[in-house]
Structure formats: structure tokens, C-alpha cells
Length: 332
Ligand code: NAD
Ligand code: WQD
Image (cartoon, rainbow, N blue to C red; front, top):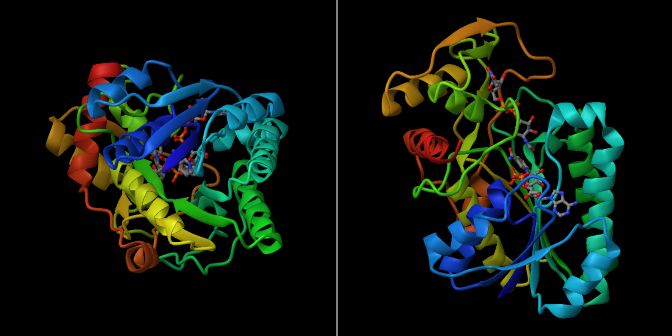
């Protein structure tokens, strides 16, 4: 298939590009490079021996989208492009609605105009209403609790409305849990600008001495060791989930929604201890107050993706910690 990856130069998109090229799909990356670097194309080529097609552009620009769809043959779109920082979305909600929501409206309009009716959307576990009932199935009540999450939820609703109006669309909503880790080559990974908000990038910077100490946000949650529990998934497992979703689209699946998680919950201390075990004792931590808005625990029920996509996360927490650190050492 000829697959367009909006936001394909970013963290998850670049790993997915590798997976798709290795499965002999053609890949076109469309990205405004607001949170990524053009040299990712060289790295993808180095890993796969194939260079993805690249078009610089913005999903908020109808003109950029029109040029793209006029000039390229596209069978399916994987829509990664968007902003993703929860705190920033609280401070700048309109920026998030414009980038994530408007950008998706324009993209879908252009797709419809060109009769491109296959889309996979990067959704998030953050669309689920906060719950203490784990594991979280796809049937759980929806209800995001911050502007970023609402952009994801509203886009999901828009895609459902679109599908209801035109059943010739195939729409796959993938709800990612907590993606971490990096390609085993150490060439691709996550490199957030500034001080990271997320756990694994923060740990990596403590390990390389760029940050001094990790603050563990709370050790009095009702969890196995008192620290927050999440479903961390290796980014290459996530990438293979997208390849399986493409196969599903080739079967004309209509509208489908899947959690992409491992189904296993790890605590903050599990992550720190495993990281220190596989990489050497590099990460010091201190217990700090809880972070506003954090839930004690959530992890996926990953059964539906297993049953219907034939997909299962295979990498271990050790793999996630080892690869994340390798990338940080090489690129951070
Ligand atoms: P990322 O920031 O690394 O990648 C997003 C890419 O989109 C970047 O390359 C950026 O330059 C590009 N982009 C942003 N706005 C754009 C625009 N208007 N036009 C064109 N390109 C634009 O983020 P990621 O972690 O790879 O996430 C990819 C998608 O997955 C996002 O939609 C994100 O919300 C979603 N998601 C991420 C996580 C996570 O924890 N990383 C979890 C759940 C869902
Ligand atoms: C994980 C755990 C923290 C940093 C976020 C978004 C979510 C999704 C994925 C996109 C929690 C603890 C963290 C630190 C810590 N993104 N922690 N010290 O909050 O589960 O999810 O990213 O859709 O929408 O909200 O991920 O990595 O920030 O936190 O103790 O310095 O690590 O309290 O328990 P989170 P995270």
C-alpha cells in the first residue's frame, strides 16, 4: 500500500515508518517538523535501506494538503500529526484545538475529495473517563479530563460521524497506552525539547547526567508499592500494531477501535529498578508530592487487538529500558 504518515518524522511515526518499509509498503511522510528533525529520514534509510518519500507541510494548511494529495498516490493515511503535551494544552487550549482538531478536519476533507477512505488515527488511553477498574477495555466510558485528551476524544467522535455518513470509509482508532523505548539500533527514539514531563525521557536524562535526580510523584497511592502504575509499551510493538491495523484495513474493516497496550501495569519504581538493573546503577530518585491530575493506576485490556488484529506486544520492560538509554546516549 501507499501509506501517508502525517507527523511521520516524530517519535511514533518514525518507528512506524521503519516497520512499514520493512513490510514492503511505500511510505510518504508529511510533517511540518515542529517537533522533529529532517535527519530522521537518513536514519530510517540507514535502518531499512529505503528512504521514505517526504513532503514538508502542515495539516492546518489546506493548500499544503491539496498539493500533497494532488501529487501523490495515497491508499491509506496514518494520522500521527498533532501536539501532545497535556500541561501545555491546559495553558494553550486553542493551539491544541487548532492543531489537532482543525488539522484533522482539513485532512479528512482532502481525503474525501480525493476518494482516499482509509485512516488510522493515533488516539490515546487518555480518552477514557478516569476509572479505578482495570484492565481498561475498549467499552469503558469515555471522558477526557484535559484539553489534549478532549482533542483526541472529539476527533474520535468526528471520525465515527464520518463513518456513519459514508460506510465506504475504513477507520481504525488506536488508543495507545504509555509508549516508551526506542529502535534497537539506537538511531531513532524520543528526544523531547526542554525538561521532559514524561517518566522515561526524564529517567534517561538523569542517567546521562543532564538532570540530577528523578522526582517520583507520590508513594502513597493504593498500588503495589505506592507509586503510580501504567501500561508501558515498547514503541516498536506499537509500530507493529499499526502494520496489523493496515492489514485489517485491507480487509475492509469499517470502523474499529483497539487499545494498544501490553495489559501489564508497572509502577514508577519498577521502571527505575529495571532501568538501573539493565543499564548500571545510574538513576537516583527522591519521593516528591503527587502530580496534579495523575491517576493511581491504569492498564489496558489488550485482548481485542490480540483477537482481531492478531497483534500482541512482545518486548519486555528490559528491552524498553535498554533501548531508551542507548538512544539517549547516542542522541541526547
Ligand atoms: P511527536 O511530537 O514525536 O510526533 C508528532 C509529529 O507531528 C512531529 O514530527 C511534529 O513535527 C508533527 N506535527 C505536529 N503538528 C503538525 C502539523 N500541524 N502539521 C504537520 N505535522 C505536525 O509525537 P508522538 O509521540 O510521535 O505522537 C504521535 C501521535 O500519537 C500524536 O498524535 C500523539 O498525540 C499520539 N499519542 C502519543 C502518545 C505518547 O505518549 N507519545 C500517547 C498517545 C497518543
Ligand atoms: C508516568 C508515571 C507519573 C514523571 C502521559 C499523558 C498521556 C499519554 C502518555 C498521550 C506517572 C510518574 C512521571 C516524573 C514521575 N500521552 N512520573 N516522575 O502521565 O501516564 O501519561 O503520557 O496521549 O495522555 O498524560 O505518563 O510518563 O508522564 O507518567 O514519578 O518525573 O510516572 O506520576 O505515575 P502519563 P508520564
